[in-house]
Length: 524
Image (cartoon, rainbow, N blue to C red; front, side):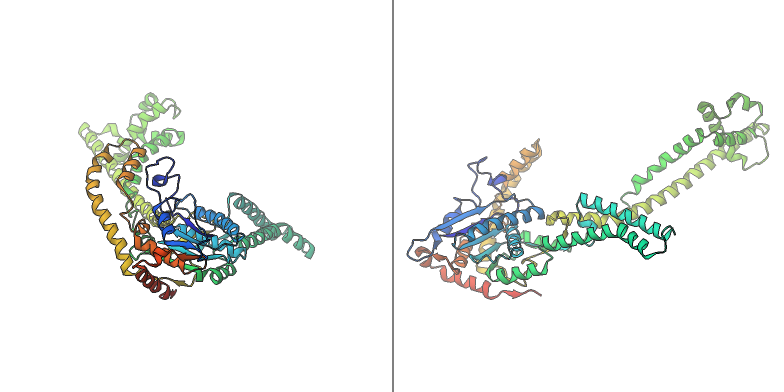
């Protein structure tokens, strides 16, 4: 018996979308599912060795949740490694065919094999189709790589260390070796031990940053890898381009208008503070009643600042008479002619407007400075978060920085599909796009009328066949499926069926395979 294990890509799972076989029996099966068109074609093209026909070809899907998540891919890789170990015990050859981030799942499984020093000798070939392999870097600081409990322990031990330093330099430690040794053991020892244990665990647990694991994986699995990808694959090229994306999400002035609204509340806030401060109100009242008849104080301000309603009347008078009192110091307000009083009041109001204008300018300037500072901080943070979400980077230990056509632990890669196969896939995708455009015109009205997100999702699912994308239409192309079958025929345990061996196209498929395998290049 020989086994082909198929691995689905991101957003393709038996419980979701078009792959939901149980929920929607009339939906077409996905390429990796039993009974799909790919499944039937592979059985028509491949037989299991030996050549007497006694071998049995088995095609088995490996299902994972398909989330765009590094944690999901790594967890699925660990589980896939368990299944590969079980296959090793059967003594039968097997191959892996994975699409999109399913190839990342396979890569994670092989790294798990490397950590466990399992060469998987019965694995004949692992083929990745349109896989954008994510490149990551380790988080620089240990604190960033810790979970909540680890961070809590780290902060506690760090607090003890700081206290120990203060005790040491505070002169309360006896000038004896034993006392200093006890101090080091008490305060520095726990955090040093904690750090050492974490680093030891990281070396054992880490897959992507352990050189021995990476070297082992390349030594045993590189020569059994084949990458099939289209030069215009949307997922591969878009993820490769994410690294170079540099857009301004928050312009320098984005928060200026919102922050400037604070000016509206500054003056009322200052008034409230003044009204509730007896000392401030007494100072204002003294200034007000210095330019009024002294008897007015007894009538308007009998409580001496203890009554907020009296304070409001005095503050109002203060806003009117205090500014002009600076223009004519020492002059009683009620001693000047009425016309002069009106002039002084108008000048006082003008001074108030001028003061409010200056305050507004100052507030606006502060708002612009704060907005610029927020823009400088939020732009890189938000852009980094958008890139992380695109890469599916959600691990604590490391973060994604790039994507490429080969795993980071391999030193060679494969060229894209040759023109004769690539053009067929692209033309089929273009035809699907042409068919989709009239459907799109008809569906716009239904989309706007959809009242729920479920209804919208259903309409979009009915509109898209996913053959509009090169990335999701590899297995719809007959010559590509034959290329996959031909590649498997080059390994032990698999051979072409008589119909495939006599297929007039097999020579062209063989040349296409050779152009890929022989043009494998060393990564720069």
